[in-house]
Image (cartoon, rainbow, N blue to C red; front, side):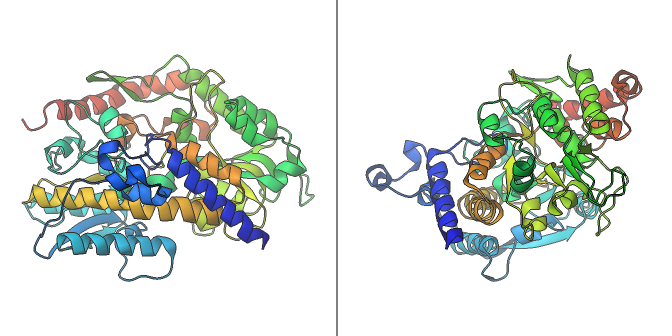
Length: 497
């Protein structure tokens, strides 16, 4: 009975949060209340619940008959369930995907199908081969962002602004498309809700039982007060250690204050500390990675993960599935830490059997003077691109816009507001924290077009090796990194020529 009451309260909080709205943020997944011209007259005079208000935002597409064509999507494996579900299964997210595709099929007389799937190398190479052969093989690519970023200089993908029916002002598109991913009026890869990036958004998991056992205090109030900084996290975690197996050695059977894996969890701190690689300045884009505080960031993170009692990062760890990324998730799932870096979707895949109450927190700020919390979506998230080989831009633009709109209206509420906020969270405060996290997710031109040739992954390399000599490393990398980004920007400046 108590669980039913808690779930009911969470649903009420969710609806209130949706009605209030918190902007699209970088990730485009939080709710924006509809503008007056996007709602019906009835909505202006009669109250509607939050989910209905979301549905009332028009996509301005009207109805079209596209003659029963397939709309073929290429998607990295593991993400195909967000693209196509053959029939309702009773799972809230599966059923939302099925309903979205059914509604679009009935409205436009077309069928959403998977054109190709595989690992991100397979998808990328298959798309490239089809395009260079001039084949009309697929309408939309939804593929691993860092791998897909390699298309920047290929000329194989359309400028999103050349597609009819695409409206980046709508809430199902990320603000970052216009704010940072557009250069010289060109946007080659775009972040939209159809890619369902919310699950890949980085957060800090919080074990409430262990937090109470170690008297860490009211963490949520610290976050609300804007004081959740890296120093505060370390001060709370420092000294939290229990030698559970009694072998007088710090190992993965013991309990720690804070844990992290040594890979992408670390990279996210670059953006959490408000140190983007590129920043849009008016109509130009500026390389801002090499900031005054960048050296301090490397020194700080090495101190945190290599010199702080109560903090653990096992660089040799391999999980049961062979993943080297699994350390922090496995430690948290086994109640071996109070705090752990990770991304939101892990709560659904790894923590369902966790008996302890747990919650979500944003990545910490650099210091109290930072204006906001920030986070990033992991490199495994999907990003969208349209091949130059499509013969009918009207068709592709309309269906792509509708897929993003209906994902925003049907799938995101199911995944985020029901699956995450009710199934995964154990307390109402975490509902609020999730809204903070998803509304402050940022996307960076330098990350999207990194292609493992830029500087997005330097943090994980140096912190893994406990190397604080960033200047020496940068001296060996700078010319290659800048040459890569210069080539990318040149492609944007010369797009279509």
